[in-house]
Image (tube, rainbow over all chains, first blue to last red):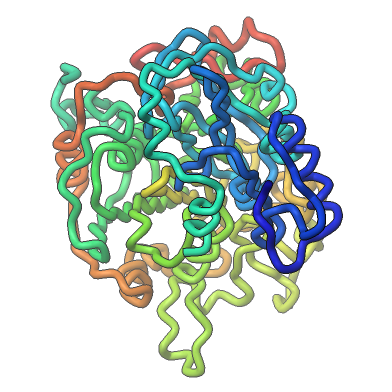
Length: 166
Length: 323
């Protein structure tokens, strides 16, 4: 189940449910409100997070990476995403790409070290998918981990939410 | 370490050592006090050299820097990180006229930089602007406070650079002047909001660059010759041509040295301690923080116009290797 908060919004609950389903995660909506919301952005239980606002979904030895709903909301309309080459190596906590929005090029950081096995080619023509579906169609890359212990340094949903409130 | 000539060698201010090439986050120098900012005030620094210096300070140094460069020695067009040359400029004209076209490391649009452009750059740590989060809009609100000054009961306490320019403000992410109070407004300026400076940013998890090209004056003919009216534009532009959308600072400010003279006070008003520095100091600091890791995924570079001519309209800017 995902976090509950005081005053969830119906549309956001639906979004979170759809997001959770797409990611293969549980989304328990009733009886209490079933999303974590911080203002207008969502946090999904079951994912791992970085303080720099990237999320990671672990599937065996492969991790899917994107930026959080909070990040896309703060960045504004995404107009360009620069991603690494498939086959390249990324390092935990180092930059793997750039997201451009509102005159700003913002670094994005890899949660794990490993080989990039896939990137989201759709973002080349449709960078707005990062805004529309930060946890779904807006995914950025998939990494085959070299050291699963990298995951220990990541936050869970609750800790990430708390870090955003600091 | 990358080998190359020492910075500052050679007569031309546009010669740039490879050592100022952009570097990744590794290899940061020892951080200074969080609220100290080193201020460089210079004139005639080549924009390519300035941008490469900024990127190196951003990636390989941990101090806060402000650079004011009054006038570029050579006219250049500067594209943002994702710029598509054919969508933004007349590539054939730029190639024919041997214009310097640069792809920078920050976001945003296209600018012409020349002898009447005042380039002001801030390369800073998160701590220096705390509690402002490192996202575009909060950072622009912070810089608006720097340039316009913060609201105070006593106007004499306002230390903003443009504190006495009527209706100077940030509007839809541009620095503008609203001209409704001005008695004689010519036909071209019939619209009330005119842009006086364009800004762009590059943001990491701990640092940011916010740089602005303020138009002390501009050559409308030059702009129209080389720059397209961008497809992506703020709503207030309403597809106006350059001459009807922009306004020179010289129309609103008597003293060309206003930025140079007032920026230190404006920085102090926001809680910073200003230390004067030189271009040589900044370049030495950038070199000192450089690392052997050449796995940088982006860098400021010269656009290969010859190659761009052969590419389609939606191709991103090709760059000259080690250019």
